[in-house]
Image (tube, rainbow, N blue to C red; front, side, top):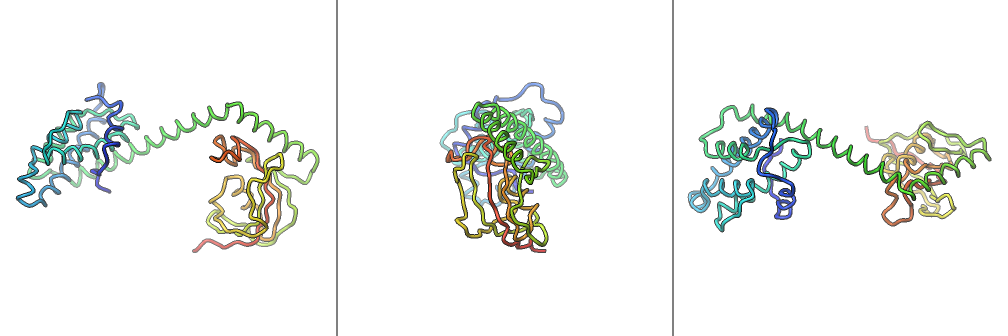
Length: 302
């Protein structure tokens, strides 16, 4: 487990303080257990680092000053110009950075409890059952991190859903669907996968299909449905990992054999999605058309 205390800058401190109160109402026993253990482990780590200082350094940076600095940051007090105090503030900044992740997972932070647990561990001769407490915190923090990630992913899905409803994204999606439907009506050899990509085999290949871990050599040209070429290998084979390209391209590669040439129609959600490309060449949910030839496969290392 990596040390929880970490360095961070003033910008991180200011960001951490945004929306953070002195303490939170309604915290439950689980929240308090996380906060208490978080403070205890940080205080114990700090004590170990402090023990390595020489007598001159300790005289210049007393435990009282360090704790005052930590408290100043946690309680949003104003720091004084003392070395230990400033060191405590820097440590508090690192702690605040971790608190952000906890708050993203809806852990209610009682800052008085946090400071108390840090101070007790820092000033104690030793912390009883420290290894057990570290394991307890690690397990709790893994759950907190998972919850924070789930929340971030849910928020991103909401943003993507909102972008998908934007006029340009909806227009591009409709135009792409109509274009592919027209191509399929005119050419019965065009097939469609369950995911939604459509393709026509122009030339058969032989051998095994590539997998996600393989490197492939491919000749390709990518176009928009109006015929505009937005990317091309200029007739030469280029190498890249099967899993390192847009989802629809990757899916098509895994259906091909060496020597095979296809024309594939990739719907927006399996191409560059609701964001399109930063340069604006490919709009949100734009359907892409690729002519591609799988030249060779370099299998993944065993």
